[in-house]
Image (cartoon, helix red, strand yellow):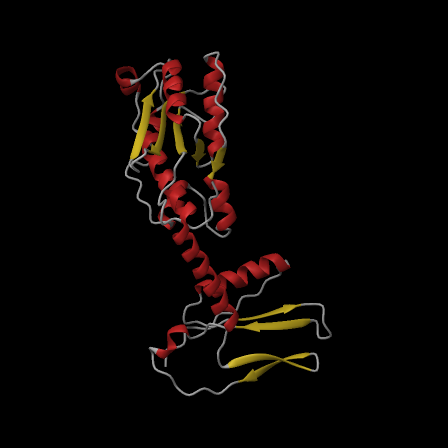
Length: 284
């Protein structure tokens, strides 16, 4: 027999929606454990019961929810592979697996995102009216499926703070030596993006800085459609401890070779978008 895990009891006052989300999450991550849910409801007793236990069954006895004890023969470890999963949980897993298989099948002819550009920027601060763009980057795939990169440093009159330099590795010396003027950088970026859909992580921040950049240059900014992966992640993963890009990349097993650089973050975010697309979370 599979050894039983320790018993844990959790008590809380949740809305019906949160309760069902928690119960779904428990079923998804239960593995060889067991769970029982007792919650208040509008019946004669004022409560009802759900359980994943295989040796128990919730039965209705003249309107009363009772727990029936079931007797099973001892099984081997191999036979206990799905121990602790209720029929409902197994059906839920089957639906998820079928959905994923359908997604993979639909991607058999298109394994990567096409007509999508992922952008990211680095700045001297958080205020687009006062602070400056110091790096702009974007990535997309070409016709053969290879990831291609756009990256520009921007020359500025401001002094890059030591805090920003430590975080991004960008200094005024680098900007003066390798930087472009903002006008040329924005023109090149617009050409790289074309009419493709734009994707990013907390993309409103990036687009707002770019909008002010175009205003400073007396130009009209592109108006491509966009997708914000941060919003999708928050909708899909409601109980993460934080939604920093690095934490999300770790969750999806994506390595960012150059974190806190526009080029590195843009590439990693693009790969994140492809995973979300593959799972059917990102719709194009």
